[in-house]
Image (cartoon, rainbow, N blue to C red; front, side):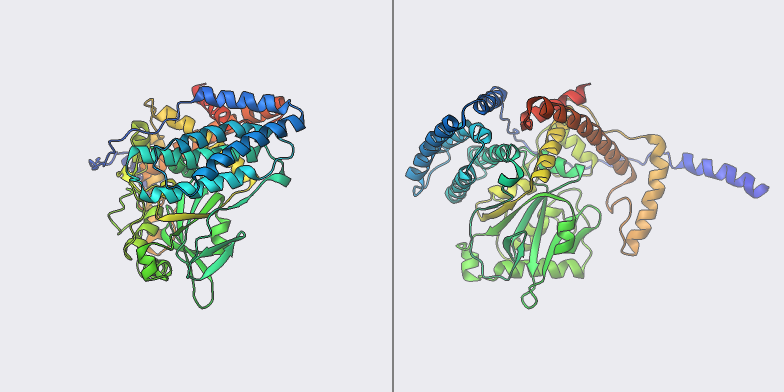
Amino acid sequence: MKKLFRIVWIVPGLYFLLLIPMPQTESKIQKAAKTPFVWGQDTLWETLEMNFISAKAMPSKELDSVVRRMTLALDSVQAVHQETSLRPDDPYYALIEKGFFEVAPLIAAQENKSDWYIRFYDKVRKKLKFDSRSWDMASADSRKVAYRLLYGMRAAVEEILLQSGEDRFVSTMFVQNETSATPSVNILGITVHSGDLLVSRGGAEVSAFISRGNDYPGNFSHVAMIYVDKESHTPYLIEAHIEKGVAIATLEDYLKDKKLRFMVMRPRTDLEQIKANPMLPHEASLHIFDESQSRHIPYDFKMDYYDASAMFCSEVGSYAYKRFGIDLWAFESTISSNGIMEWLNDFGVEHFVTQMPSDLEYDPMLSVVAEWRNKEALFQDHLDNAVMDALIARANTGEKLDYNIWMLPIARVVKGYSIMLNTIGKEGIVPEGMGAVTALKNTDFVNRFQKCKALTMLKTKAFEEENKYVPPYWQMVRFAEETTSD
């Protein structure tokens, strides 16, 4: 009876003891003194949608004739400037952007659309990547031009794809056949070489935050480096996971981990370092492959790419190549919005001048080899982005992540159990480097995201049933914003 009496007192005592908040240490936050990019063109997006609706009502032959005339004009502009190296302020880029946005909704309305829009986008993408080799990519003007063309034209291409039937959906886009001397393997129809960087978008809620929580919101949330064994040609993916730090995945495991899209990037063959040593990318990937097995590298929640004792996903590739004289991320990624900084700081981020996965696309040292996505995954990608953009807007108005304090003792017990698992090399429920409070705030974030996503999905389905077409991205954002303001 006395034992039972003691237990009755001990359990509540431990519970209330675990409710006591830990003393807060002041973290040194590295802030970015930049201005986030803003499209600020809501009127244009609405006009494009009205043009799409009007085009759907046109006779097919008339619409095809209009599209043909507009595409021939764009082809002419592109051909005239194809062999000329241009500066970011050249009128060519503004003309291409304007013209492509104007023709995109008309192509989306076509019954029998060709793949012109994909081929044209790839031509412009290759040209911009070539021209940007001589640009100062740290300058705001260069960044904006590269972003508006690479990200903006991709957005237009994907709106067309989402209005296409399954038989006309193009999953794989081949961009630049950058040669490589390193061992290779085929992934989803794409030849990938040892040392390539696979930039992808995951399906988790935090993946949407990573891809959108940037001064230049993007499409990608994760970077993996591929190593291909010279003898067996077996591929391995080296990547940093929140749950377990830097780890090696088989190709099967990599593809099994939900991917909404991925893009293959490869160092240019004409880089001086690679001309001197064509096997450099393979050696870089072998180095990080070996190091990830020789020492435990925890996940770097701080996102400090100067400290390699822990690594986040982008750091894996940049660290490996830096050891061989190639400094990736030609410019630093910046996160300047106060709301985004506060929410990311709740997850442990302290460095807001860092290396974000989406920004790797703009590095002139790398070529875009190919890009993959499927229709269902692309729709989910757009839906998640719209939800995240709406939540970020709330964060920037001062809304904070919260947690249920009465769950803190339970979270601390789970964290303690997770630490025990970490000591024997196993994954804990609460990731290594993440505290109990952070885990609870992550739960709040996920709950907000899922609630907003479910309501946005209902509005999206209702729109599609009424209008007989998939709502464009700006409509999805509007739906998501309505759900967060209810």
